[in-house]
Length: 138
Length: 183
Image (cartoon, each protein chain N blue to C red):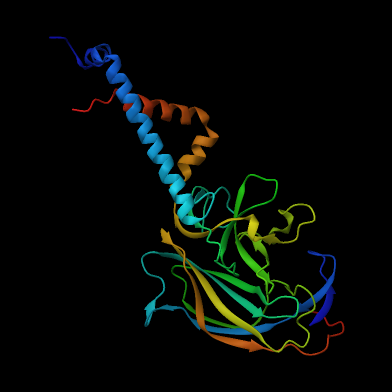
């Protein structure tokens, strides 16, 4: 984790987190039914980090996403993934933050009808160290 | 007896006296008013100023394509959370944008600021926001996408791009309602 100037946003230094993760998931509907029934066109999966800081009571940052089309294998087995998006905090709240929860959720996109947002059961808590890293290539 | 179906139509027009014409006009006005009332009712029920929107760009493909119809709600107590599909307007611009929330920072007092990105875009929406604006707020939100119908919105896009089509359609509808006789 580093404290870096975020050039894409507000011109202030904020904490930037680096997370690598594995995902093993079986996207089902109900008890063992395949999520891909006749009215499911695709799933938009995303891994989000949720945490609290002194600045903000609730923070949510999407680290990674993937589109799973009907016909794709609903079983995910990903190892050593790096986050797709920069994990910038709004401030310096990542340093020493012990309670960052990563959850996998997905948006069900039907052929027609309701667009539900489902959160997977199972989540992981990630603690950030108390110190910043000095330059290390990402 | 008079000949042919064409002659019957003009005969009808001539025979229709003023009273019947006024009646048909009132009928037409009632249909238009009812439609407007239903629309206003939807605005009240959903809490959104525009409860039904048409997708105009391909920035949310493959989920939504140009011409798809989205149904929105905008309940005040619904918190904005990552992963949700929101329709928002950039201050000073008329066109609503449909994208996904990828970052949320909420303070204890309920103040929320969030960042959006189109699924099909490489980068987040900061380039679309106002000059110097880095976050969206609740006030920029038109609604949250709760349901959708594919293709149906194409009619609106065609009517916008080809105004002649819109006028032709209105003329045909108007003629039909005015000339229809209740048996």
